[in-house]
Amino acid sequence: MIWKWLGALLLFPVQMVYLVVKAAVCLVLPPKLRDLSQENVLVTGGGRGIGRHLAREFARRGARKIILWGRTEKCLKETTEEIRMMGTECHYFICDVGNREEVYRQAKAVREKVGDITILVNNAAVVHGKSLMDSDDDALLKSQHINTLGQFWTTKAFLPRMLELQNGHIVCLNSVLALSAIPGAIDYCTSKASSFAFMESLTLGLLDCPGVNATTVLPFHTSTEMFQGMRIRFPSLFPPLKPETVARRTVEAVQMNQAFLLLPWTMHVLVILKSILPQAALEEIHKFSGSYTCMNTFKGRT
Image 1 (cartoon, rainbow, N blue to C red):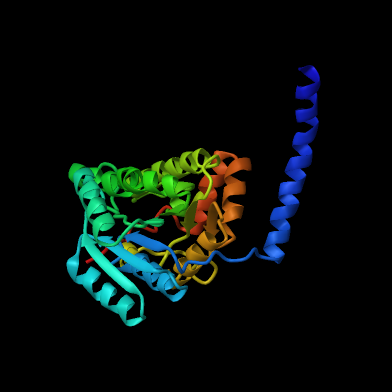
Image 2 (cartoon, rainbow, N blue to C red):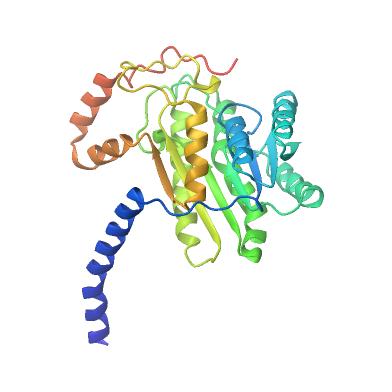
């Protein structure tokens, strides 16, 4: 027994070096992209913002069917018509992912009308944009229900069939604020941190499930209506991401079976700095970058 443990101990660093080298090679020579022609993709919050661009990108890359979930029928209908004009079958369902019963009911309706979902994109999110003491209790609950608990309900609704088919992918559009919170968006940061933990646990739990994988995307501030009014101190150095860029990189990550994606790549530096710098230094970085006050002019979606 002792030799078995000794062998495993000696083999472990070799495995680590191999995996690091393999990842480096893949950066230079990307793996073959996954074919989407047989995939049915469901995008929550798919009527506008990043969700709309995700629907377009999946359709552009040949997804078989696109299904949109959201709370505003006008936006859903407009996006559905746009996707159909691209030549891709598209359906929409009005669904509030923060409502557990509604999620399960609409998931059943999707299976009956459209078929099995093989790629689930949890994109729906809201932001209250207030400090804790200025926050409305109902608004706080709403952000937690939609941004975090909604992923529990949608994943529970569609993952079992993916496991049966041995074909599926769970995608989460998260935020870099899950790793580095800011004042003035305590509801959003908390919900995204919870969502990140959910996806990290789920990703590890799927390691022994053949054909079913997960991808978590953590983008920097993206120029959508949801964060209208948010101001970055040095926009030339840290320009907001375009939603079409986030959508394109997300679909590529799914096709390459990439577990975690930080956008832009400079966000990796932030993670490293948080690991090694003392709290006082991190506070000075926040002050210098303007993240302490970036939500002072926040207006949100009108």
